Length: 474
Image (cartoon, rainbow, N blue to C red):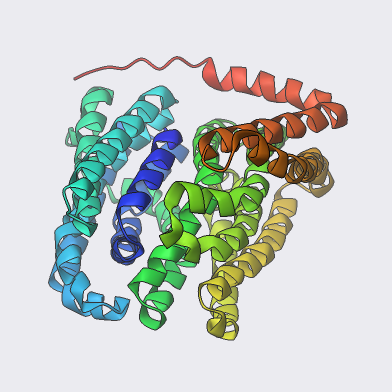
């Protein structure tokens, strides 16, 4: 699925300009923030709760749809004012067009939560893949026809409509549509979990997207395009794998939330899986970034090179920190995520002011510092839940980090000989060979340092994929 996203990002970056991506990135700050508040954490609350699912589904659907509609109207009516805040009055029409997405996206939140609660990840993954393909086809077609930034806007709209259709078709029972007697007790159960989750999600979202607003006002829309693409490419491989694994683990954690020993063991196994496959990615991208930008995206994107390399460091820190989020949610402590997000937000604001004269790279550096401090606080909170777990975490991370350094060394050694062998024009073959060498170096060292880790990962992977989801069409 994420391969489709990467292909989409590469091809669209070659066709569209940085200013196009900057414009859509700024608009999506408003749409994304509104989505967080309109969702109200209802989908996650249903997954985590052990109460009557049908009752909660109906109540959650009514709440999210109502809030989503109200926020859509507010964003539409205040689009001119919001565009001014974003630093570009020409964004008004884009905001008005995409405002209904706030309402549309909420139509699928509850059925998506119900599918994940039943561990039907095959179904949700299939829907995501189909929607990504639709986005790619629409965006590429319209971009080639000269629609510029509007190709991205129409693609976003098509993607959300497809998600709604498939979630409604493939989630059995339509429990969220069957009227139930209104009970404020059920609403309280949802909001007691949903409100802290929404706040933590809002802080996390602002931490990632707050720099875009400042960059847009100070440096312009094109600079936002460089920053948003750098952030996307630095985080896409890591976050993509993390999202899939964390989604599975959150549902699994929720089912064993009362058994502290099993929960601790499940977390460490999940961390093993995440660290094995994601830690080498930022290291590899850090080294390959110059060639990837120049050869795949084109010279017009060289302005994102240094920010991309800086954000690779942030991605490494972020991937470790993100593993605790589903754990805290599953044990009913979303407030922990809120605290971490608040600490990161304060650090980002303070450091951004100090680094403001450094341009995009300064804002990227602010994120690295903020997420690093956030990780330290994250580990402190985790240790309060599972005392003496930090040494176990370090033991898990050590093989992947050491192996990644050897991978970097191997890439440095073979880079020039590979270019001599295949020539400068055959950059796809050159990139493939470098990736192959990197993977071989990484896993060779992993096997020497901790062979048992691969055995554990293999066992966990079999546990994850052994659940065969049944797709039911209403």
